[in-house]
Image (tube, rainbow, N blue to C red; front, side, top):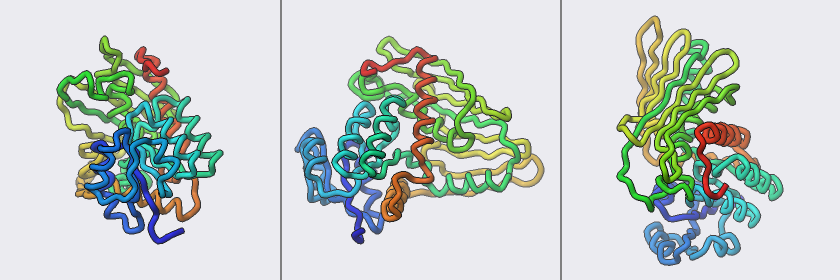
Length: 326
């Protein structure tokens, strides 16, 4: 493989810009193409980041872009279609969270990766941050004993805008897929696939969830208690309880700033994790996997992505939430 792995980006929103900025710190990556549904938007993005390949449609990008891997940063409801298109075109895919709208579409994307023989990974950037590696190290060292409870949640109050994706059911709006996905990923990463799923939520007249509570039960007695709301302000963080202590994952949960270990006996310990270029860690993992000839990352497997989608599907079913495109 060449010294530089060629990256492309689908979409030109805020996350795409953050990813493009952070990709500059990845030593063996080169950003070579960008696509938008508007050529003018793609050109502005290309000018900002000195990108040579500019495409005014996603189809043209898939057919012609000189890239090895594409970061998909389009709206939720487009993830499956865009991922499959790029996989069939011979590109590896890093797809932004939520991976798809539901597990049925997730399965279609994974099957496309299998058939094409291309690499595929969900862009759950939190999974690859140094703070999460240290959290897993503490847990592997049995620092808090047998796990009993994961509590995580938060709230934010964005101004209402019917045209914003968060308030639009046709684009997979609502807090579960947008913010709750981080909490579900945390639970799956630490505790695995639950035995029991119990969910309640507040569904608006427009058909999006503005608040939810999710309780997951595991073999052996551990539980996860998760919540997100658009009706309060609370910094999203997490606490992991064991029978010998507590680990506090300081917020924001999507990019934790510190970990504190509170043993029931002994002194507490805090480690800070100031992170810049947070998206770069997942890009480095993609490059590592591509150079190793892997189809999926051992740190973010297809099975884990499916488990997250299954949990969110079941939670939405219990809340009575169904998107128009389903």
